[in-house]
Length: 143
Image 1 (cartoon, rainbow, N blue to C red):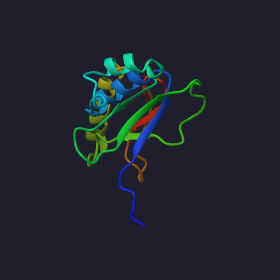
Image 2: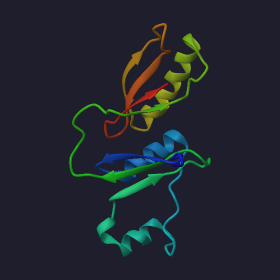
Image 3: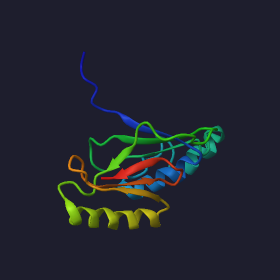
């Protein structure tokens, strides 16, 4: 059997478009083009009123990165994520230099609506990271 090489990351959320736009800003992703036959997503939603606001996506401008998909669900987030994203802004950096880069990105993301939870300082095995939440409370790390 061939190995699966493509996947998407799916988020359950209350407001798919809002959360997708947040992650597009965080990662420099774009919304995918509307389905064939529709000039805009608004045109698609007018033609399919049952789908209005039910889902949204974010795609990387670089080929090979996973697509991110955001789907509306009725229930809210209850417990800690079992899987989370690590936004890799400090790769290769250590110590104070790494913390400065993480802190600068933390400031940018809190301006977008993210919430800073805590800083995990380097412990001799892992480098420092900042634990955060997106605009609907999904945990992620600045790594």
